[in-house]
Length: 158
Image 1 (cartoon, rainbow, N blue to C red):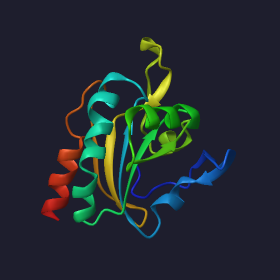
Image 2 (tube, rainbow, N blue to C red):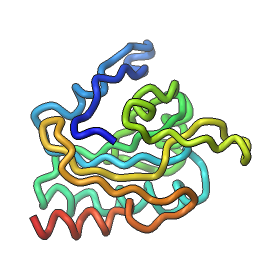
Image 3 (cartoon, rainbow, N blue to C red):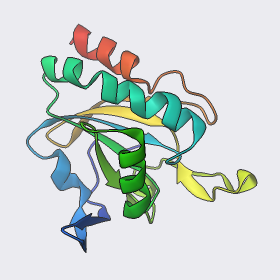
């Protein structure tokens, strides 16, 4: 894990075009909560992780958070479909389809044994102007500290 958001390249799809962007730009000059998960449409990610942040979005805003990003080692098409199917309106998705950002964060894990290939560990972080001020990482297969409630409790104590 790094102290700052790395200058990793991600591919985004905007206006029906693919563009290479620097993920660090999404964290500049703002207060951001970001959470990463192993994959779209997986059970814990779909039933708990993503919905928790979507449901708590307004509470995060009251606490000064300007953006909430969900980061996953999935392509932009998968994340767009997941956004639509899950009914997510407020949380923004950042596709790390090649795992570049996840690798640069030292958060890559091999889930080949379960047919998922290389994925992200499940984690959450609070970032101000690109600097990571708080980082919660779940152990592989667990979901106990990267949830929205843990992050809200941290922000309330700041």
